[in-house]
Amino acid sequence: MEQPVPLSVGGVGGVGGVGGVGVGFRPELAADLLAAPSAVDFVEVVAEACFASPAARREASAIARIWPVVPHGVKLSLGSAEGVDLDRARRLGALCRELGAPVVSEHVAFVRGGGREIGHLTALPYTLEAARVVARNVAAARRALPDIPLLLENAARTLRFPDDALDEGSFYAEVVARTGCDLLLDVGNVYANAVNAGVDPGALARSYPLERVAMIHVAGGAREHGFYFDTHAHPVPEPVFALLAAVLAATGPVPILLERDGDFPPFAALAAELAAARALARSAPPRRAPPPPRAAPPPSPTGDPPAGAAALAAVQARVAALLTAPREPSPADVRPFAADEVARSRAILQRKRVDDALPLLPRLAAHRDAAARLGARCVEASPRAPRLAAVADALRIAAAAAADERLAAEALVDRLLLRARFAGPAADGSVRPRLLPFIRRERLPGGRVIWAIKGMGSSADVRLVEPRR
Image 1 (cartoon, rainbow, N blue to C red):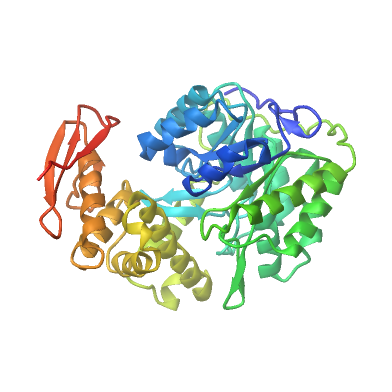
Image 2 (image 1 turned 90 degrees about the vertical axis):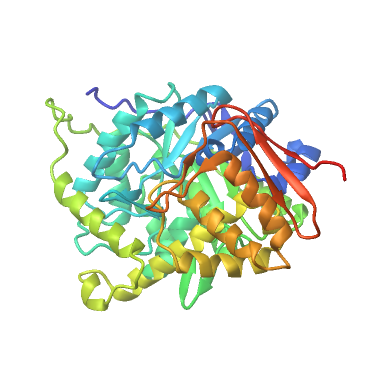
């Protein structure tokens, strides 16, 4: 295994040629962004959305002709002690090359353990063992990625591990030292972790290795039952902008990306937030050259797993089981974790399942409130599928909505399109991409008939045909 090579921040206010302010590209923002392309200097796309949807991938390729596009991974699971999924890493690398990406980012988190998909980014224990695991997985993943900077993002924390040995900032200092990667600092996550831990957000931010911050995420959030969630569905609050200003005073101008994933306001409101972030970056002091990186311990010459990986794998498997079990575990079952933190994390995962499924049902999602309520009931009553869980959940929701006369027409068309692209569900609830051609019809309320036609291959286009009556 090669020694990690530090990736320096590229240029003043940029990394890999990316600078200024950007936004996460979402279909709801497409028209406004294309009408005012100068509102942003770059955009970010969720890599897994491109893997799941050929249309989203084509859209990402198209917008790469207008702005630099940063692929942002959410399922690589760089913190999994069982190792990184190399097939996912290869797919991420292929997407980066296809988009001509100047930089790529992923999270310091795990999303699977003990063979179970958690379905959401789960923060790691703050230990040297966890930092070693991240370093091993980053080294493996980078072999599949093009020679561009890989930025690592800090995670929001809803579940504390009883064996934490480092404070939050020191843990991320270990991660950047051992991986050679710079940080994508999510200021919203820093703020959330600080507020929920009862500490000063500025002090927590200063504990991070700010000289290794190459990009920043900022997003809105909200308090629910005394807990602050980084929701990506609310305006950025003033305290988060204040924390952003404090961080920029230490880092100098670096690229800033605004994340907004739901409850989209008129574009003028987002444009105002982008302008505020741009003004803060422009007023930041010049970026100083980072100090020489601390030498990382050499990796094992035998390629053996890092010390403590087996114990961490066992802990992650238990956490995955607690968070995905169909029934709420008892307080005795969750020890030594806090019962309220496990319950909160499970509730977040249930909400996340609905949030992941509804974009796959675009017609049904137009009835947002009704679809969300129906989706919550569906996922609560069914265990998470081990593979392509969002597709499996979307099929469940569509089946339930087809029995509701108010939603039936939209649900039947959405379900037909999903069936054209995916086969299943299997006995364990999972689905798989449909490789063979598909042709099938659906009779809608009122007697209309819709046909879906797909050619050979999982990425073949699906056409809807409605015969003339």
